[in-house]
Image 1: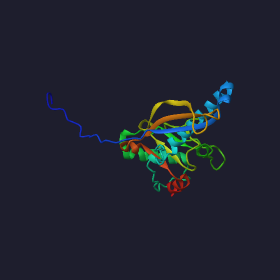
Image 2: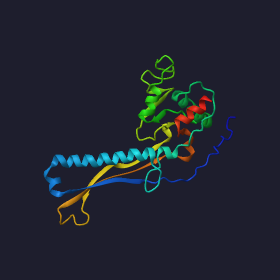
Image 3: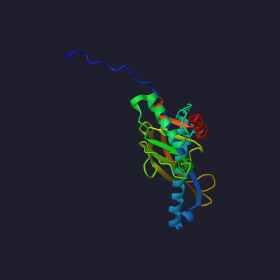
Image 4: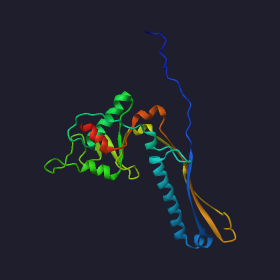
Length: 232
């Protein structure tokens, strides 16, 4: 084959777009309070910054893309369809393994699920599983502290919907940030004559899971139902 033409990929690019959303919070204060109490001024700035970060966290997980919100993880991830597998006394360990299997079966070697995202209650339900003699069950593919299941890191997210979880390959989810949280002050309405001002915190970012990469994500919308199906 020396000197022969090298084969060309048949892959083609398809244009897409992702919206950079603006997330923020405002808080009115008097100028005297803001100027005279430096300690409280920093507390107010921290309050605004924390509020923005909480909203960002929630939208990254649950955003629907409506009303200037991000399209979050749960909106982007395809739903997992459990299949009757005859697994005796199926538990969440079994479930995440089957979800991971579904991802790799469909995507082949492209995806390597590396994370499980769920609420504390779901994680505890998994960790507190016992056998018939009240001994804790720890499968051989789970780390001693329960934070790693078959090579997948367990990530606690208490803003995730109850009785659900997500298994994913996090390499294919990206956050695009435009700087950090910007803090600024200004006046609205009659604030000039009232010696008042408004503090504003703003953050611009986008969250993207490409259509071509959604196969690396699965959400279980009802753990109870999924376990019943796997056991049947």
